[in-house]
Structures are given as structure tokens and as C-alpha cells.
Amino acid sequence: MARKLSTTTVNKFKKKLLAEKELTLDENTRHLLNQVEHALVMIKKKKYGICENCGEPIPVARLEALPYSTICKNCALLIES
Image (cartoon, rainbow, N blue to C red; front, side):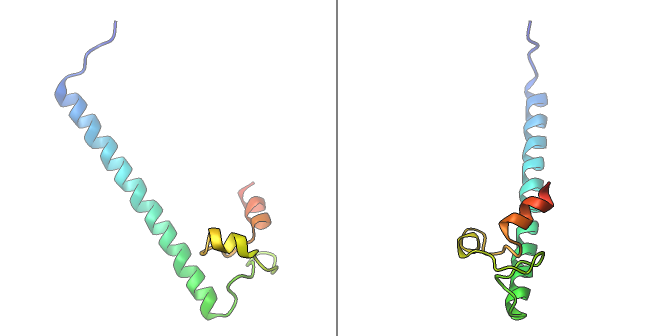
């Protein structure tokens, strides 16, 4: 049989999940902000749109999808693996 949880236990669990969700969103936001700031630095250096890894141009479609990207898709895949 399934055990019934008290309202207090359920509320504590909900608060914990909400706190974890907020922390994750905060971390993701900080990471995205760092990427955007780095892309702005690359613009100032007149190197925006050039892959930092291989030196090849980053396709416009990738930059439109991920304007903060500083590496091409092929290098991103290599780095991830």
C-alpha cells in the first residue's frame, strides 16, 4: 500500500523543489549572461563570428540561433564529446 504523506511533508518537499528550480534558473541565467558578455568582447575585438577554436567563420544561421556563440558547430560537438 502507498503511504500517505502529511501536508507538512508535502509542503516541505514543494519548497525544496521550488528552491532547487530557482537555483537552477539562476545558474543558467548567469551562464548565459557570461556567454553574452564574452560575445560582446569578441565584437569589440572585431573577432565576432570567427570560431575561437578553429578560426573558421561561424555560419550566419548558427549566429542567428545562438548570437552569443563563439565557436562553430563542429568545434562545439568536438568539445562536448
